[in-house]
Length: 250
Image (tube, rainbow, N blue to C red; front, side, top):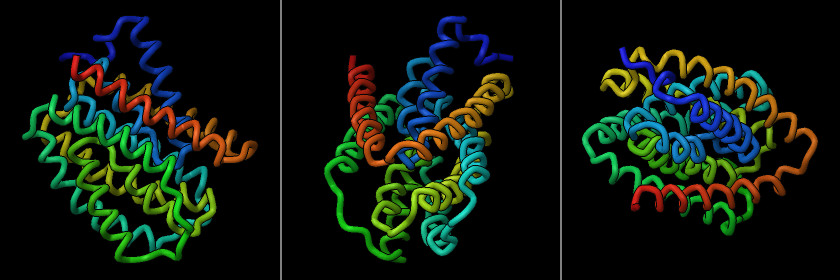
């Protein structure tokens, strides 16, 4: 049985898990999850389909932790409006991920990450009350992208950022939606062979990282103004997307 963890040297392992922890912290602070950072990091170490598989399960760990840490203030109406269409379309997107060229998906993912980072930085409309049409549309697109490219949390974050939600409510609501999406896509990835038993030891460490990263992220959010960190995080999203695209094209 091929062990993913054993495929990394000691130095590669230290770099990979350190960057995964950083991705988890930044994803918590930014409010849109760690996949925007984790996927570009992971493709430097594993093939794209393996990255999709471990990202889905890593996100299950992460969202369960967020739900525990930010359990107050969940808007269940928004969870249903965004979550149901997301779960439906994420399954469709997950099957696309097994049919389309890995390199093509990496290019699309890199461009998407850079563009979404710029949108979040410069598009700051006034908040509105939760809207079912916007929620359903955003949830459908986010689910499709999550399944095919591994990252749709930024789309959901863009929709949720339009609504008048507190920081804790934003994160908790997003985590419940993401959990449903990640469980659904992980089931497809496992059935398609993206995740093998050889990933268990690596995923066990990522579980610990999800606990540590979310707690550090919450500690920071309790002490520092979120908007300042959010802008820094978004610039890092843009840089990550561009660097990932350069890596794929070389």
